[in-house]
Amino acid sequence: MSDPVTWAYIGMAVSGGAALYSGYTQSQQAQAESELEKKNAEIAAQQANAAEEAQRRRSRSILARQRAAIAESGIGFGGSSETLQQDSAVQAELDALNVRYEGRVRGMGFRTESRFARQRASSAMAGGFLSAAGQLLGGASDVYDLKTSRVG
Image 1 (cartoon, rainbow, N blue to C red):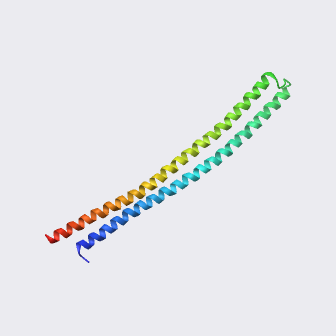
Image 2: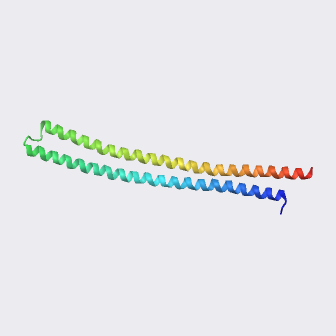
Image 3: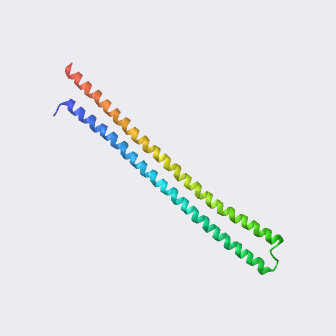
């Protein structure tokens, strides 16, 4: 088994196998990252929904205290106090919508990262195959050189 051609074949097979395995493991890691980013997107959506509802509860409480203060003051609910109440309600809704928007933007970022990770997974597998093919061709060339040098 000390034949150099045999060792060249073994080296070629080991190098090709290592390249395939490397591509496979990189692909699996990227797939796992993609799944994690999908989960993060789901969590971001849930958190945004909860934060939006919390913002709405805070706003309702503030508006209720504002109405109570207006009623207690005896100035009535028309005119400037009505305008104040309407402006406060509009601002409260904008705050809640901003919380929702921020959550959607975070989720979009996670989904984008998930797509990038899936692309890396595909690229890693293709790279592993190409690297293995290069190793095999290089090894075949080495074997050919060994065989031709023994003949000549």
